[in-house]
Image (cartoon, rainbow, N blue to C red):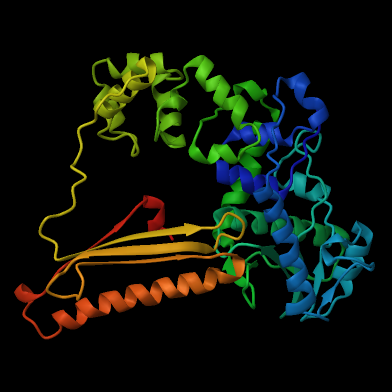
Length: 430
């Protein structure tokens, strides 16, 4: 069995995709994949992906070179900061000697044997390659020195995968410190994520994340890595389009008539159908939904509860390639609202900043000078994103302030109502 190329970043992406197949496929060295029946990965090299990579490296250089100059130990050399890396031996010396208030940039950590023993992992099956946290920061501690992991992310929002990555770095650092005889303590309570344009890192409490990680390492990782790749569960979801194995999984789903072709079916719903009813294909699902008690059985799954009839129509639509109407609420806007506002926002794909924003206010003839108003802002470049977002907030505030002033002092029955709409549910999170 080939040794696997595991890393904190790969484990973090596994938690993002929620897919055992992704982890198993990705961890196998490329040279060994074909013998195990693993398809070739299709890495998408687009202008956006290249910009994302360049932006991440530029953010590292900015933090290390400008935001904390003189406080970071870096490997010697010329050129960009992100090209400098300490060797494993150099890293041990730096981590052993650096004082509180300073940090090590791209120190190399080797996962020691004690780490594998702690979680019952066979290093011949679950092999972690050397890893490099962006920053390891030294803080004063009652017992001496506290070493905290800080990761640099060229995005303006914190993700679950970020927490998983720094959490696993912290566990590896803890083991490496003990194995290397370093007089310091790894911070298992907190870690930092330094987000794009922030002056300081955001400090996270990671105790719960470490509990999840340690359960995964001790009870799940070894089983996933030892299992035949074809036996592991998988499920197509919208986020699978970011996976290098998406095309092969999509082709398999279409050729086999997989239940993954049902729109909106969650990974948890797919697992419930597989484990509870033996459903793998659309034919299996059709058979299950036609059986007595199917709707009652679906009540045990939160994402499928009350959706028996919807699933029946979706199966028919996918299998027959035809449009099957669903009973649902009318998309008409409420007739009794006084003022309506439709809002739309768009993030740029590289840094995740809001690059386009707009709203349309309608109705309210007795409140506003005009029956409607539109405001639209589009950034011509990255440097204009902040102005667009700020302009949108100010314009929307000014528009709603008119309604607020109209209602002020009036009895509730005489006040005018407001209804807001978004063009996509994802905008709710923005």
